[in-house]
Length: 259
Image 1 (cartoon, rainbow, N blue to C red):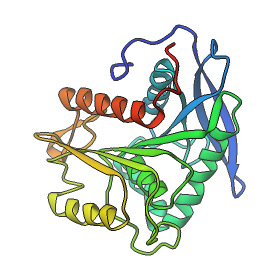
Image 2 (tube, helix red, strand yellow):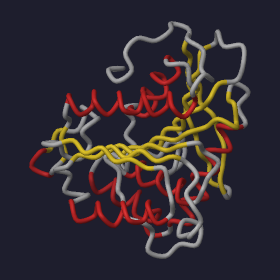
Image 3 (cartoon, rainbow, N blue to C red):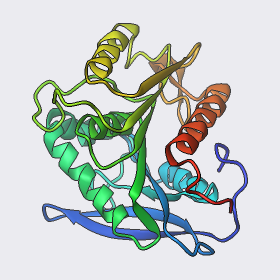
Image 4 (cartoon, helix red, strand yellow):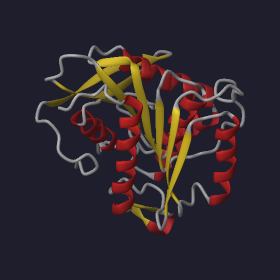
């Protein structure tokens, strides 16, 4: 499934990249076009809380490579660690949600692994994330990771309650795009204003697009549990990906030749 990105070059390839953080084995998936002759801007993709073995983030990396960007699906939980149930997702995500400084360090290890790849322009990197991954990329922005921009798809917006790395008064340097389902029960309307205030107080270049009639996980057709507020929404997926496409074009401007 490559619905979001449309057509892509038949020379796009994907390979596993093993790296580690504090002795913990991690495995990312890197997508590139083997016809490239120069390093490309890279978009890092952060998985959701489930991190299933169905390859959603890897598909997004491949789609991005077809658009002319290197795509790197990083790993938060560990090589071979996957979730299959909601209970799995909660138990895998919770330790990182409770220690956002440690999460920041784990994420930066993935950024460094991507930046070290020969196909990647280490000075032109962005990050996108889904659900839990949306929270992750927003924390990277809060901590001024070496990124030009981040985009959150149906991500958790709450700022860390106790964190040195991500609670700063410094201006947020990466540009921020939030793509949000207005009927997402995990991020109700009352959480929007504190997020907007945080971004504005830190002088971020930020934007938030809310999609009406849209629940959590709206961009992933593998999720269909509307009774739990989780459901794929075709139009919101299409619109949010177009918003991302425009955002990346603005971030990287003329630095991605057509492929």
